Length: 149
Image 1 (cartoon, rainbow, N blue to C red):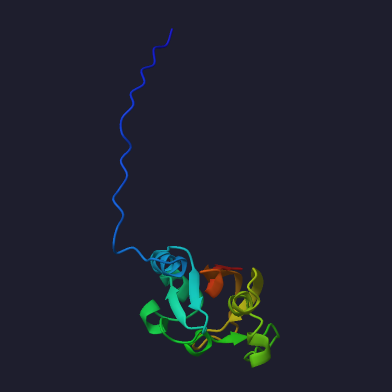
Image 2: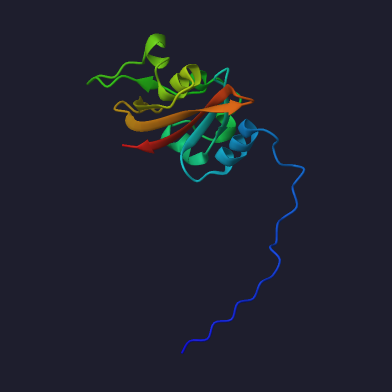
């Protein structure tokens, strides 16, 4: 017959850190910066607030420090169409990419992006899933998770 002993002790709960970000948007910013997964966080003005290193690699953007603080579409991100000889997307088409669509609609958005890096002619296809990030009930930005297709 098996013998089981049970011992109860107090649960260790770390003290609340005073350095922790106070709002939802700030917390996501810290997580995205440290994430191993390719992800991106933009604010309501479309400025890149945080991007993971793997997100920079996937989007052909260099290092996170080169992109943070710049508008998403002016930080080196080159989006092209899916035709045989790719050309850059128009402003009307870029407004429909998942990070911007989630920001403007306040809803989840998903779509494929074709990203062209420097010196690359074919480009790569990236699946993007975006969600609005709320602060005090209002859309403060969008969080996008990316994966290569």
